[in-house]
Image 1 (spheres, one colour):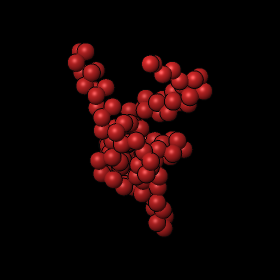
Image 2: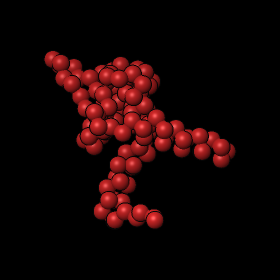
Image 3: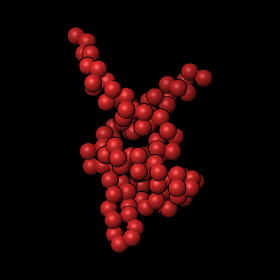
Length: 104
């Protein structure tokens, strides 16, 4: 039996998936998956992007509740949200990449 989702759920899912359509945000998620908790400058350095680009990406991901932060004094460290579906990065996106490379 095929399961079809309703329009409301489809729109909600499309909004979340659109967050992954930005290369910096995707790279931020993979970096946090790989390295755990990172500050903005450390993350920017690892990804070779500006602090502003890292900060903006984190802001968008945090507003979607995909990323959480801990503030100590004036600095903040970011990590994937506790309920983040790590299989999404570990399996689904890697498989999509593989399929995309096979099509070339």
